[in-house]
Length: 439
Image 1 (cartoon, rainbow, N blue to C red):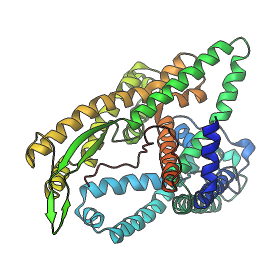
Image 2 (tube, rainbow, N blue to C red):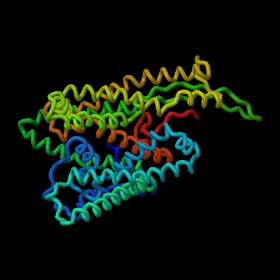
Image 3 (tube, one colour):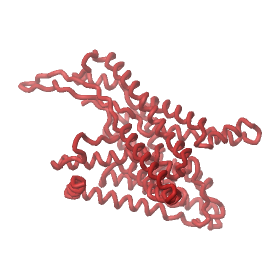
Image 4 (cartoon, rainbow, N blue to C red):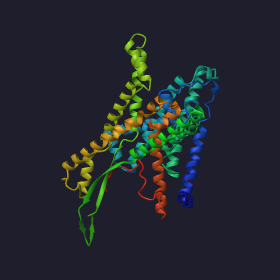
């Protein structure tokens, strides 16, 4: 405990770090306040609870802003969608590949295209949001066209403002701004969920509630291990004599993360899991099979839903890892810099070796990721309430753990840079931001 308070004191001793932390807190408070400001022309007392399915997922990410019909009703999600689209285009379209290789100027162009695409996606999602989530009786404006136009404009402005907040947190705060906004929306529901669970159990269920807390602790520790686990491939660099100096000769490592894809496979799989029930709904009246499919894939606790969900996560993990990590490029960079893996020939043999290691590491990582994704369903089957069960795994827990580790990594780097002790007695905190690279 003494070391903990000493670390806190050291953190606030560093002026730049203290300023960044206070800026981050201020920006997050603005974001949370905006999630309670209801769109003009809506009676909040008549809003129906439609935060189910994909809407429930969005509401969890936005900290209730979606179900509140707030000015931040879409939050940062259109920007996330635009970023995913641009990322996929970067891997498939030569023009975006060229921009990516142009350095800062290329990144600025890609960011500008992402912002423009965000506005278009916000208009599309905003129209669907107003049509699907705002009941007619909650709209107090008689002119429906005027209401839709003003609400759509405000939602778009709210998303752009959230995007600006995220960029300001990245520039003047601590951690990745966009990820921080998602995390604060998720974590804002945790105190209410745990209090509701405790009150539901009462004194008679105190032991079961204690077991839930212990189980949650071990699940969080397992997710931390999944996020931190790395398979290091040793790389030896040949000595080079330049003038009177000797360069190279040292051993470095290529860090292959067990979960290189992060949370993206769950997001991709979750977005597709709503399609069977949606398509079956159109044929439900004329087909018993369609009714069965619709009922099965609308039930998040059915074994068919969870098995399909887990298989899709495994497949998407391999797919996303394959398109984000290129063994050929890594092998070429090593060969160009005079590096080699001990016992492996440079060139094609090195590429095959890295690909084999990547496949062997990704398989257990994808299976573990699938288990984490379906844990909330098992928690609900065990009697945990729906809101509290969401923190036992899935996208929410992975995002929270990843963002917190990234933030702690930045704080620790500030401490070590000022010659203070790190946040751990041994080892270093590794966040998601570490990429595979060969120096």
